[in-house]
Length: 251
Image (cartoon, rainbow, N blue to C red; front, side, top):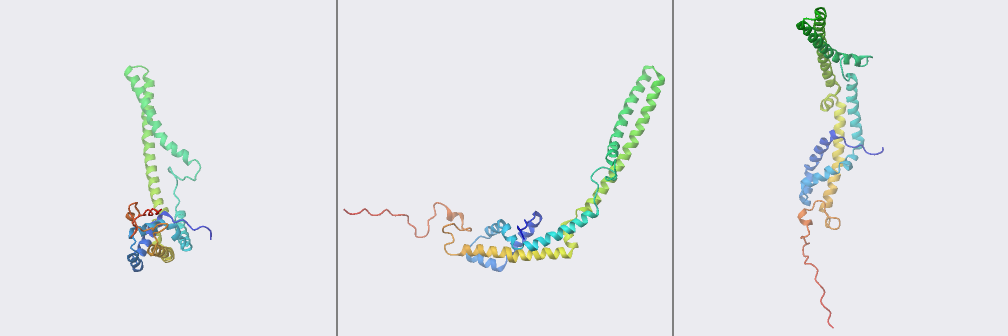
């Protein structure tokens, strides 16, 4: 089957919950009392061994993730939203129209301000009255064009934003909602969690507790659950009095 699947980030909370359930079981609690191992350190060991424990339920996890990807992919393909800008993005020239929709109000407003300033300036100077009237007329027309195009652009932008929000709500469903809507997916998740607890986490914790409770487990390589106070340089084994120098030999 190849390498085991790596546990996804969205499934780590399920793994932590399954680990807590196994630790809270009567069997593990009884062994914890017998071995004297701290609960928090046992939990840390279980979290650190996620790659080892999840490998025991790899087949169930592959089926669960495949069903989840299929459910999400089907919904995402039904309502693909345009990337950006108003209008249909698949239509040629839609990007140019979007750019013109933004630039036209700006350019028309700049032209209107320029023509109006020049026209009224000539009127105040009393020179070239015909040209001044033309400039003033063109300026007001440019101002009207700027106002209309700006209104159209705002309406188009609002409609695009509303369509994008609706498409995102359909394209990216909530994982819990997907699981609730699909009985097969919910069943696959439950099967994976049961296999994870029974074949992965529980045997690992039993092995850790057996090693912690075994006589002489802390000798040689050191116990995983020993308290730091018993590993310090000032600690001596029971009955250890230190090395005694040999008595001098009599001549």
